[in-house]
Image (cartoon, rainbow, N blue to C red):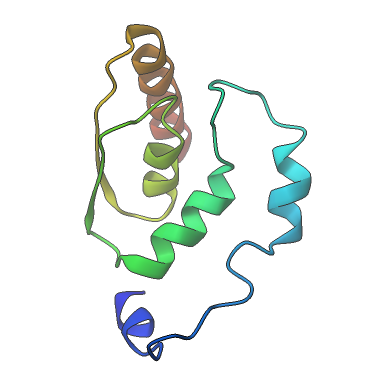
Length: 103
């Protein structure tokens, strides 16, 4: 959360932010919607580090919508922008699918 991030002293490097074994393992077996797609679990971890529930997250380079899906999972609001129509449609479909699964 934001409050725990503020407690990190200047110069301290968190050692385990990227060392989540199932993220690495899952990343190699997932469907690839976009060439630079990140694992949802990684985005959830990053979102949890710097935001609180209900915060709004802006992703101006939305790609296939992984950050949007992670935001939904983490109870954050999401604004996404994507210039490529195909990726925008992919992101839209993924976010709609996630909405239907959560309701």
